[in-house]
Each structure stands twice: as C-alpha cells, then as structure tokens.
Amino acid sequence: MSELTGKVAIVTGAAGNLGRAVCQTLAARGASIALLGRDAESLEATRAGLGESAAFAVDLIDPQGLEQTVAAVRARFGRIDILANIAGGFTMGPPLHQTSDQDWDRMMDMNARSVFNACRAVIPHLLGLGGGRIVNIAARAALKGQGHMAPYCAAKAVVIRLTESLAEEHRDDGINVNCILPGTLDTPENRAAMPDADFSRWVGTDALADVVLFLVTDAARAISGAAIPVYGRS
Image 1 (spheres, helix red, strand yellow):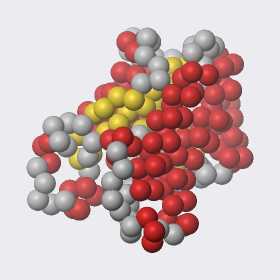
Image 2 (tube, rainbow, N blue to C red):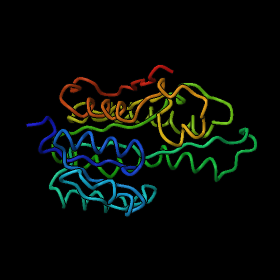
Image 3 (cartoon, rainbow, N blue to C red):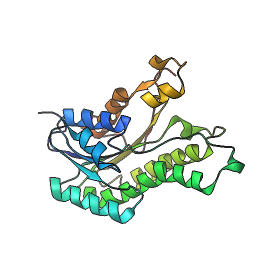
Image 4 (tube, rainbow, N blue to C red):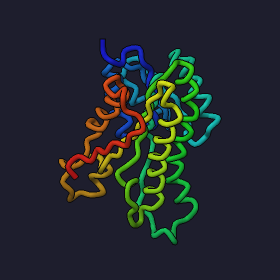
C-alpha cells in the first residue's frame, strides 16, 4: 500500500506545468486527485491516466464558486486530506511608478488571493476530519524585491506570511501548512524566454513535485510553518 492510499488531494492550477507533475506524483503514491483550474478541457486532458480523479473547472478568485467546488469535491470523494495550492503566474512589468492597478491586482489575484480563497474554503473540511496537509507555492523572489517585479515579489511574500499565520492558527488541529520557494522552473515557457540559459541548473517540475509529496506525507509530520527553498543549482 502506498503512503497516500485513501487520501484525497485537491490540486489547484492542476493543468499547468507544475500542477500536472504534482497530480501525477501524488496519484502515483495512491492519492485520489481533485483537479481544479479554469479550463475544463485542459483539466480533463491532465486527468487522463491518473486513476481515481475528477476535474472541477472553477475561478479561484470567486470565493463562492470555490466554496461550492470544494463542497462538490467532498461530496464526490467523501473527504479532503490535502490541499496543494499550485496555481500562480508571473510576468515582468514596468517600474513600480508605472504599474497599473490592473497589473498589481493580477499578480495578487493569481499568486496570493487564490491561496487565501482556497485555504479558506478547504480548512473547515480538514478541521472536520481532524487534520490534513496544505502546501503553498511561494517563490525565491519572495525573499528580496527585484526591479520590474514588485507586484510578483510582493504577492509571493504574502504567500509566506499566510503560510506562517495558518500554521500558527492550526498548530493544535493536526493541520500542517508549509510553502515552497522554487528558483527558476524548467518549463517550456522559461526555456523560450531564456534560450541561452543552462537549463540543467533549473528546478525540474518533477523534482519540485517530489518536495510537495514529502510535505504531505507523515515523513514531514513535524514540519509546519516552513518556507522551504528549492533552487536547483541556480
């Protein structure tokens, strides 16, 4: 029996590069997977071959819709044990004084509000079952501001503080909450944007998915509130 047999994992951003890797890794260890994302067709394509799984198209920025979706996950599988907040995004921008409200809100929504909304919707179900695991994706850029990246850096810093606050709030509830700080991920998009880089120094999505796996298993039962750097060799 694999270590996640009988567990149900919600994965947001499930159809993205990292989301797919996380779904595959958790499913391979026995978890049932609820795939959340905005595009139903992409979710269904990702779900193929995962075993016990279901796709739920939802806008993570819509709190009511997300709460209804999480309730539907609970109804479909009977329980929720794991929340992997993988959804997010990045764009370079202008200097801060030229940054629009729309650009600021986009980074905050994609990277911080999505985590806030998902945690708020899922935690009551974890409490009802006596515990669970939450893994959030922050970023190396959360630790130090960089030019033309202020909204992204700020949003990912929010993820760290949310993680720490949630870990403190639920330290006696059996809910472990941690976040990961990846360096540059080896994705087709990043390769296209930086064609002269040494891709071997970047973090593979499968390698980062293994860190997510570790944090949702009993091997990490003593870890909560951590921000774990995963930089590869960059």
